[in-house]
Length: 122
Image 1 (cartoon, rainbow, N blue to C red):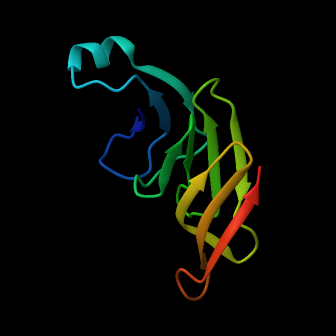
Image 2: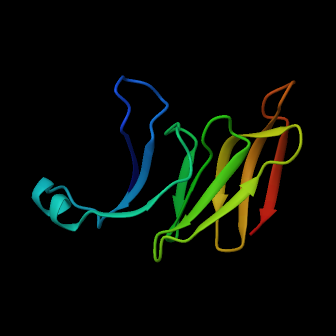
């Protein structure tokens, strides 16, 4: 399993100076989780929204505010790939990530929501 932890701000806010991606084998034991959890990488962002992230086949993808860029992290080695939504687009929902593609529903920056389904080659 994988998850994001944000920390470091002095107040409760979406903006945090540290946004870390963690991973561990799935367990229902807090003791086992504590002993196996590993911080993979610190993302080059200051905020994330948990609803705009997906994981599939050892990859984790997240599109932080303002949703114009997605980061794809390899859970195997912590390498990061950056994908831009493109001019006048933002990521509404990340749908699927593979080693070669990212699929996402897009919103127009100054327009309608959910107007396109796009495939990005990685």
